[in-house]
Image (cartoon, rainbow, N blue to C red; front, side):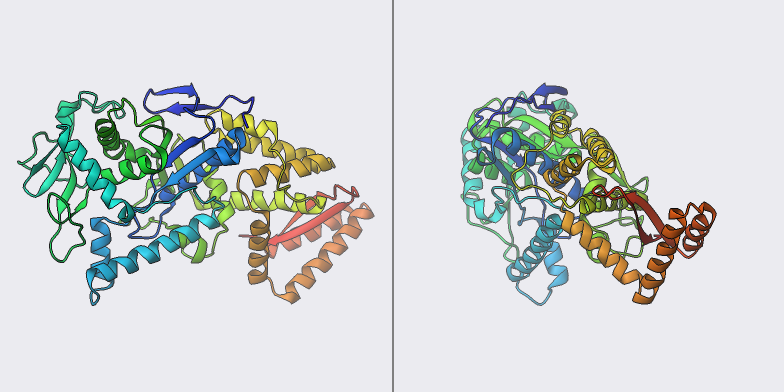
Length: 481
């Protein structure tokens, strides 16, 4: 299914917003770098997952659900994983300890991103399932003169690729060694990076022509993307921090191994995320995992609904820096509650087969302009509050298309109210609201305002609205945060 909408995306490779033209409209292909499963995903990790979930949904709308292939990998071989396994399971053989770490962490990642309303990718390959392909690609790079053995490692020769650095716009002579690799004398160039390194008897490893060892970080994504999407595919996504060295090195490996000018035709990168105006770090005490937000009371003394987290991540256009704050979470949760209450009073539900409204699709086709999309939601809500039942339905459908689960929103509201309000308090508040509505009916505004103020002083916030079906005043309440 082709759409009349013209999708525009900002391509990091060209530094320009371009019309998106897939190589094959019958199979639009996208690869996004996934987690290294040694620790719980933090809120910065969540941003690309949510951003590219929205793009996945949009591509399926534009080209048809059966014509989009989305691959997001899991890195389950890495020195950080080895270190975590030794720390957490010192009494187990290392391979058994690694299996426990990667299994537990991957399961938590899946639970966390599901809570954020993200669809599963079409394929989710694990690095350890593609070691054979990595060995084969490394052999090809050596045979073509793009890689060499030195002191127990196989390294990519960056000097063998004149175009190296085009993505990051770095000159080769200015390159520094890739992440995770120290500058050693055995390298031909300071920027040469590891493709294969030897493993000790205690470390995980696989047999290869260069000895028992394990792959470098970058080769993993080159092999997994080619396996599922081909040598050249449409979109490669990830965080801004991956442009160099990871994505630059992926391009070098893939293009030199396959003999292509491109690896991906469009490169998309989301901006950095801060927490309360500061860079997130464990030393500052502001390192927040999705587990912290969803399942503990570490932030704001409470658990937060996944839908509120999703909305905060989409309130800022994906390429811009994002400041993740508790206030933003509160505002997002309140907004979702108001929208859900409006939809619930209208008695409508998201239609499983409904097409998203044109205003929403147009906004997303403008380089995933989610702030503009959210503004469209506000417009539907205003029309619904005036009694437009069709607008209420449109709002429900639009939220559903963007991945917002209304049932989860409602459950979160009910959970907060259940935890915060005992039956006796609820009965008292409901009684006072009934009194206030009677005063309003009698146009005794002074007494009505007095009750509102009295309840506000007690920490009860009233919300007045109108029932779209009857036009009558409806008052709901919640405890102040």
